[in-house]
Length: 238
Image (cartoon, rainbow, N blue to C red):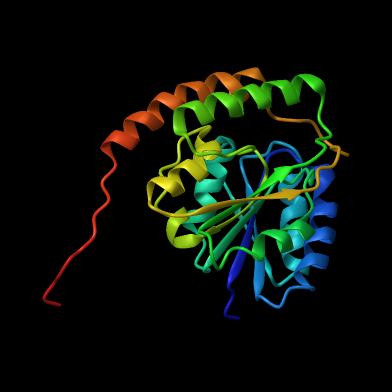
């Protein structure tokens, strides 16, 4: 089948969530006119996630998986997924399903005009501390990058694959996806989406990977911005 849209789902120790992932994503794909598939990226899980992933892919012809040999973090899982995608568009959603696959529909409305469309979580169902760390982290990042993004940590995005494959990925760098698309001369759009409490499993993020690491990457981003090479060919003979 000639697929146009691949939804990447990074997974690390989410065995208790995977039946919901299968059910909700299968239901959503059945509503799409755009031929779409799912790529489950097992980021070195140590629980029973892989058993569930393989069973899901056997039951669903439009589900595939990648199993990484060790845990590489969210950015690493995304990098692996992006490098194995050959569709025009790439989507991303977390396996905890605190965002809904149905809201991809809100983002798809804009992907013909923009190169990255990202969700902005409304009425976040996270702890107070988690929301404060996220708010401070987003504000700090905006000062450095001037990307204008309200919520780069939102785990619901659609990107044109040609742009996604040009983004250098380091651990923790997924929060800079919009800024890196802008550096390539692309255009980005924010769209409000719903947010839900985590039902199963535990969050993999804390102060270090929500604020301290992103602060370091703000300086790396500034270096990359100064060194970034963008060129236009005026004329060629072939």
